[in-house]
Amino acid sequence: MSIRACAVVLGVLFGVSPAFAGDPVAEGQKLLQDNCSRCHAVGAEGESPLPIAPPFRTVMKIYGADSLEEALGEGLITGHPEMPEFVFPPEQVGAIVAYLHTLEAKP
Image (cartoon, rainbow, N blue to C red; front, side):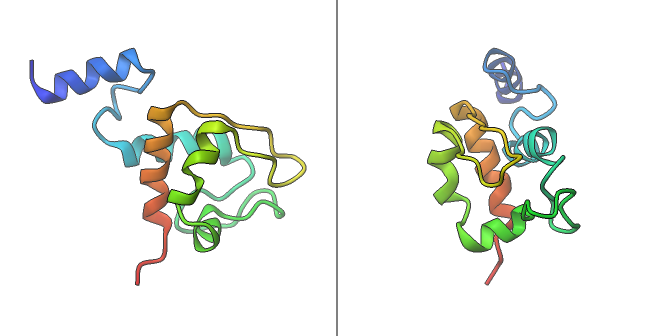
């Protein structure tokens, strides 16, 4: 079995879309788009739909992707009044952090 085929099988077993198996950045972006974009700007540009919800690129300037890893796995505490609590399984946390790294300012 090829590495790609293994990634797809593992992705199906662990709830990762086969389209993103092996591409954690794309999976992380999709997870944030699906779960967070109704309030936050999740990309490198654009304004947040909810003005009190900062764009994730701004959050990355304050916290950095790695510092959010534990909170993503244990449950994000409400950052603003309308924000629901989110808890992501470990494989999704890794993908989200991989994507958030792309939003961090490059020196």
